[in-house]
Structure formats: C-alpha cells, structure tokens
Length: 441
Image (cartoon, rainbow, N blue to C red; front, side, top):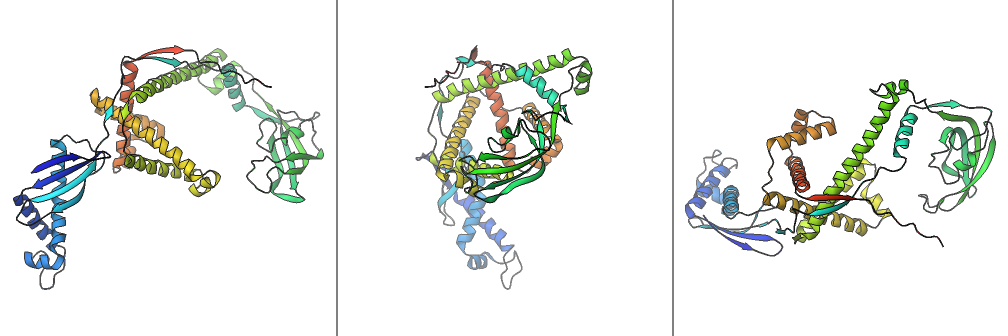
C-alpha cells in the first residue's frame, strides 16, 4: 500500500491511498460473500447465489462500497501511523476509483491537530496577588455557626426590630386591581433578609403584634411583570406575631455539640484553620491561573474555524442542558438577551477552551508527560467522593461512554501538566492592589 500526504487549508490533510489490486480483489470477493448471506434472491438460499447473480441483484457499486468500508479502517490506521499524523477528526473518504482487478485508489481527508508554537513556559518568575482573608471573616464564620444552631422565640411587649421575623397577612393592589400572587396569610418574613419589593420590609419595623396598616411601595423598573414595572402599589398588612432569633451561648458544651471539640478554643482553632486552608487553596489556584495566562498569551496557534464551530455547538448544548436543570429554556433566555450576544460569548469560550487544551497537550507531548494507572485511579477516587458513588458503579456507568472516559483522562492530563508548571516556575506573592474609591461629586 502506498500513500501520498498533502496539507490543505484549515488544517485539512488529504491522503491519496493506493491499495494493491490483489488486496482490493480479496476485499471485493469478501463483500460479495457477506452481502449474499443477508439478501433474498429468488431461487437461491442465502449465501449460495453465484457472484454474477449477486452483482446483478445489488449492483457492483454497493459491493465496492462494502469492500472499501472493510478495507479502510486498517489502511487508514497504517497511513496515520506511518506518517505520524495527529488527527482530531475521523478520516472520511471523499473519492475513490475501483475497477476490479486493478489497484484501488482512495482519497480520504481529516482534520489535523493545529500546530502550537510555545513561548517560554519554564523558569518563569511570576508575581501573584496573594489572597487575603477578609477582615471580619473569622467573626462572620463563627456567627454563622451560631446562627445555624439558633432558635426563634415569640416576643411580646415591644415593637418589631429589623432583625426580627414577623408573621403577617398581606394583600397588594396596583392600578386599582389586586396584584396576582400579591397576597398571603400567616407569612413569615425575615425583616433583616427580605427579597420583597424594596421598602416593603423596612415599613414593618417599629410595629406591634395586632397592628393593621397600609404601606406604599413602588415596583422596580426592571420587574419581570410588564404591568407592574415602576408602578406604585398599596399593601394592607396585619401583624400576627413577632419573633426574635436567639443565638446559643458560645460555651464548651456548644463546641462539643457541633463537632469533635472539647473546648471553645479548639472550635475557634478549627474555624481559623478552615480560613487558612481556603486562602492556601486560593493562592494555589491564582498561581496556576497566573502562570498559565502568561503561557497562553505567549503561545501561537492558528485554530481552524470549523474546529471552533464544533466546540461552540458542544458548549451551546451543555448550556441548554444546564438551563433545563434550572427549569429554563433556550427560548426563554433569548427573549431576555439577544441570541447573537449569547452565541458570541459561547464562541469566545469555545476558542479559549480549544486554545488552552491544545497548549496543555503540546506541553505534555514536549515534556513526555503521560498518564499512568495511578493517575486514573486517583482521578476516579476524586470523582467517587464528589458524586458519592462507588468506583465500580462509576466504571459501570461510564464504561460504555468513550466521550466521558476521554474527558476524565483529559482532566487527569491537565492536572499533571499544571503540577509540572507549578514545580518548574517561581512565584512571588504580592499584596493585591487596593481599588481606588470613586470620588463623589
């Protein structure tokens, strides 16, 4: 077998393949026998009709196509291996010349992986903005823990505060009509954390249980109901009950209740460790992202438009699936935002995803970074914890889906490359630049 390789535009490689006459003849004869076994020909049992009869019955072109389909997988595999072709699409036959008894000539095409020219990716000195634990983060975390174990108690003898929860009846009207969905009985409203119309909860502060009164509000201009956008509304209110949140005392007994701690100090130390660990993880992620951005910006790669379009369609389908999980549709989203704007954003994401993937693969190939069995085992253990599935169940579910398995393998390669980059570059943590406050005039 002989093959001539020709590079065409858009990273398309053309393969002119010549298969010797004897191999083509053998494939043709096998195709005749195979077809004769499943076609019904009057006067003959399946598989017993002479070649000439089969040819007349199904046509020689159908037999030739069967022969080519049987020949090409092995032939293409040899061509790809002998010419060290790095393809990203399956080869497809575009033309052939098949005269029985002569050499078979086949033209096939496929898309090659775009060539990547790396800039410097090792021995870089990278400045990274150090993550900062926000001021008050410890107190907030501790307070949130106390809130998780808080209780609510009905209060009497005082007016409502903005930290209380009130149980109310309400009924709203706008433009002289009742507001659809604008009424409720015995509704519990947290005055300090309300998602009601601006100004609604605030007017319930300073009121007492048993009070009945009206409040005036205005719907936001961006409200989802066209009839109510920017419209004034009146709500009749009756307060049935006022409740306040009681936080537990921060004692050793509380510490024992919420975890394996003996004292409050141990609990506080655990909270601080959580904040420190989160900072360290953020510093790691920021370091990886910073060095990878430098590498991506310095690399050169010409990505074919067809490759971008395929990835764009893939990302669009992923986006639509996420919308379905949220109870939304593509049609509903495109009513809120122009479809061409959404597609432009998706296409940009597709371009960056492809470029990042090509660069990672190039570094892996250059540095001979290869997956080992333990890498995949570690990845499956990680996914097992994330999805709360046993590894055997996961393998059973993913085993027949090559796309998912390839994606998992690619994730493992990505992580190995990122680890390599972290070990082979230097990082200097610097304080994040303070954002200038806008001056008010």
